[in-house]
Amino acid sequence: RSLGTRYNSSHYVTTPIFYVNAAPHIGHLYSAVIADAHCRYQRLRNPERDVRLCTGTDEHGTKIQQAASLYGVPVAKYCDDISERYRDVFRSASILQDDFIRTTEERHKRAVAHFWRTLHSRGHIYSAAYSGWYCVSDETFLTDSQLRLDESTGTRHSLESGHPVEWTEETNYMFRLSQFQDDVRHWVKQEARIRPAKFEKILLDTLSEPLPDVSVSRPSNRVHWAISVPDDDSQTVYVWLDALVNYLSSVGYPNETFSAHWPPAQQVIGKDILKFHGIYWPAFLLAAGLEPPGQLHVHSHWTVDGQKMSKSKHNVVDPVQAAQQYTMEGLRYFLLREGVAHSDGNYSHVKAQRILNSELADTLGNLLSRACAKSLNPGQIYPSAKPEHLADLLRSLEAAKRLQESLLQLSERCESHYECNHFHLVADTAMAALHAANNFFESSRPWTLKAGAAESNQPRLETIIAMTMDALRLCGIVLQPIIPQLATRLLDKLSVPTAQRGWNYLAESIATNPANLGGSRQLDGHTSALLFQRILGES
Ligand code: ME8
Image 1: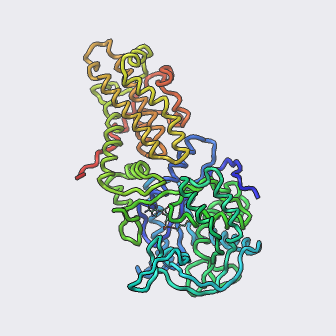
Image 2: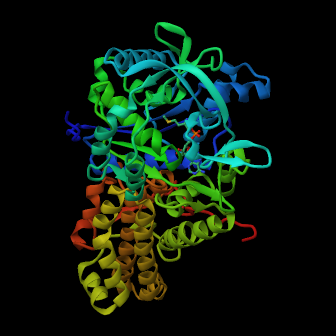
Image 3: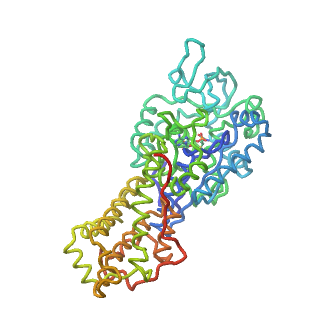
């Protein structure tokens, strides 16, 4: 069985599909923003590649039924409403999804039935009496070692999530997970399969113990808001099997056309659902004779006061409200700037305000305003650099040399960071270049050369503005995947033609060759030079 990733011109990327038991919070948006920035980079870097992003909502199971009845709404209507809120948030955050899948759609139900029948006909599903501790909130059975006993009440809770469990005895269909231990381990151990590496280690630890078979159905009288097991109405398909198949339904499975996109190049998930994606999912796929995904990108959690932000803890940050404070672009920037995959990030208003004011408003926005100021740039142009003045600046001004060095390294550095989804390092690199540009602008003292001063100063002034705008242009290109709307406004203002915003245009800079820039061009008078308003209020 070949486990290698075959070359495929399609680059299929997924986010988890989100439960509709409550409205979206910034943790959900974070997964979508990571996947979106990854896809935007892929499109920028490889315009010929067919990049496809899928997200959606997970709508079956007891907890969704319970949430609907709590609100006194029919469950189908409840799912429609919450699913729509996810769509709205993702739309306002510029998530460029090619598909939004809902597990209540017919196309998905068809895929699940076909997938089930495939597992069954290949002998990987059997019927058995099953008993164990079931956690409704996590929709999973837990073993004794995964439980904590509360001595005072005699109740048991999941060690990991803290949610209560109940003793459950039922007849279920079981999946022969135990038979896939070696294959799954082999898949996990492939180079760069699980990122970051610490999550590979967690999976290998789990895989060092024998894997038990897993229950993949529930009695319909207990869980009826679910997909029926094919040819047995008395059972419904376990929500996790149902949910994972969404990645197949979205690309048309079981129609043969799905194979044009299969397997996914990258699946973005939170660390809470690592076991399902890193063990069950590859095992299900291998059992069905399908190739498992190329890579899992696992990210950590946003916490509030050290606690995981989650619907059940009532400590969530609403993305719509946060966007009112910071704008959606500001929120995207903060999430990708401050979030790192390998460890949890604490969400705080003070931190968001500080980062956005210092980086987007001051370092980036202010530099654009200064370079476009009428007093310095009365003709409102993106000038061309004059080779002899550029050479002189580079010779006489340390800050000019440092800016040139930083622009020369920009493309390669950002590329290697983007390849690993290290968006915080991309932002870091771009901000370092912009700092260098601000220093250069200050040290070259363009205001001493402005109109009214000697005519002969004009070429030097234009060269300073050209170099500053070049830094802004290159950083604008690089930041497109992270802050697509702001970067577009920046590039619009600088009148950079749409066809010249691709990754290969990073090479065409006056940092490499003053002749690269061509003639001067008019700035776009319809686009404001005020890119990002400072966030006011207490800090
Ligand atoms: O688990 N910080 O759905 P879900 C960062 N339906 N990311 C967070 C987060 C936080 N505090 N909270 C949630 C499910 N997430 C299943 C998935 S996939 C086939 C089925 C993100 O609504 C993170 O990606 O509970 C996490 O894995 C996902 O939302 C869980 O969303």
